[in-house]
Length: 571
Image (cartoon, rainbow, N blue to C red; front, top):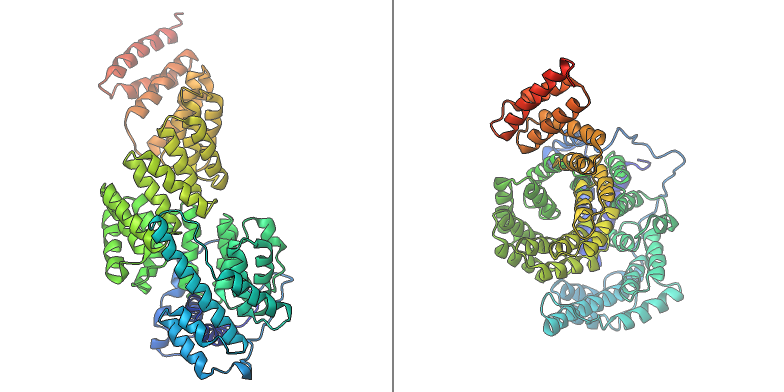
């Protein structure tokens, strides 16, 4: 990277103190993790200093996300060196500020704001407004539960937003606002729906103080298209690379995201955050083996980690790995059973055991802890589908897409639910939305094809197009080839049917799979080759059918007789 490791360390150390001083806990935690993620020279430091960094080089080699990428800046890119602002004399902590911080830490937000009500200075203004913002959020949550129940929809709003917006707009206008005030102002504008100004204000914040990861995340949530992202006027600080990598992932540009993380690893070679983000992108690309290996390594290095472990549980669920999911569920339960991620992991465990009602109970518990926890809504929808409770499934999926309209799993779930209700036109609408968001997932194309095949639609040519896309998208379940062969056969397109039956047969042979699909393929190919007077090929397929004991054996014998007559020149 275009900045030295030592400079990054110094910047992060100062930033952690400043973020912690303003009670921005999530941002200071993130900065501290990246600080430790900068690889130390083992020759210069004792083993106690490098304990969390052991095996980093081998891990990085093993989980190489893209081709080798140079560790120097991209040609023509120069990194802006943003000095960490020094604390102003007027902002040296007063006794009142120290008292307010202690109240804030104890979640007594209104007391904290009251203590600072007559204090001047940028730090005091920020903490007072931030405390009021969180007090308003806390009250909003309470009103939601009182009015609608813990998972109900509610019109409750943060009643503090208007006054905070007025205070911060005034100081921004007279030029006395600091980057932290800008961050909070952006947060408030976003909550009020003023997204354009929120973006502008957050860009001002990160350009003047790039180490506040929470500000970058708020900005990311306002970049829902690549055009919006490209329109941002951002300084070339190394924090921008973290932002771009994360935003590329959210925009489903997974290869670009992986390339950025690979580039960042030149400096932050031991960052567990980067490893987890690489796992997320690989998960979206359905590289489950690689994702599992990364999470195993993360748990070995950081055994009490809960962040992102819900995704690991999804991989173990998909692979039907009972022992691994059981161990993970036990681990998070013992570490912190009231984290939303923990409840989600335990919900996945019960789902894999077929205990769907108990699974729903844990997903609901996760949502009581965090009503906007996207995965829990989607997974709870899946459970209701399994329980044949379609209305509840539809409601859960709709709540998921309300939170994130780019969640392809929720759109796919809605499609499944409407298909179960015998409404293929609606199902098709939702499947199209999911496949637009995740065009590389064969399951979505297959689901669309099923819709086209239903009695209400019978659009077989469209179904064939979908199955072709699925076959080109690494169809792991091996459904598409067989369906293509059957549909072409049904439409009287024997040549195309033979092509796909042959491809399906080759795949079954490679995977050493037997069963009715193989019999069906052999039987069709034997008849087709015989009709085409390709008697030697037909004979090979018939001979293989003689190994089976069903009616296909008799059909093969009859075909062999016809082949012999054909070879003898009889019509």
